[in-house]
Image (cartoon, rainbow, N blue to C red):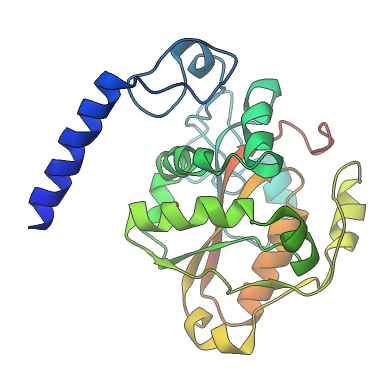
Length: 253
């Protein structure tokens, strides 16, 4: 019956697309698309990150140095999280879409980003047990009404058949925006800001966790989260994001 239901939904969805062709997520375009997503014009401008990559932070290499090689920054100072992957480069094209999700109530973008991340982090997905989002402080969550990282993490867990840990991390103090801060100031800003609640520690213990966020800048927030998860007994913590900046001192977000 479940297969019949899936088939019926697919047929109904196809019929609806014929009657009301879907509009692209990039609203400035008048072009229709075959399914929910970007037009060919917008798609061609997203700088998706492809192998070869640093096995640590996921930064793209200009040439292939071999399997498992890490960039000089990761070799000099290994991040607290084990590995990271990003779907694309954070630039003027990806930034507009990410900010629509983050600040303009465009939660319809979350499923698209989840599929991007599932592809980019495919080599990590079969090695993790659960997906958890980087949390917002409750004050910011009340103001924004939703956590953009959670909106991505939930469909990502469903797509990958992984457990979803929605509240495995809590941001116990308001850290303010990371935008405009140096790498060192970002680390100080989130120091000891995250904790695994007692009610989640049994599930986190020995689990391989995939941490999900929207953008990787210096990695300070991700490291703070990874430190809290590992202190609670997580076996490993990997990171997956929509986009990563080209350099640590990138345009503030």
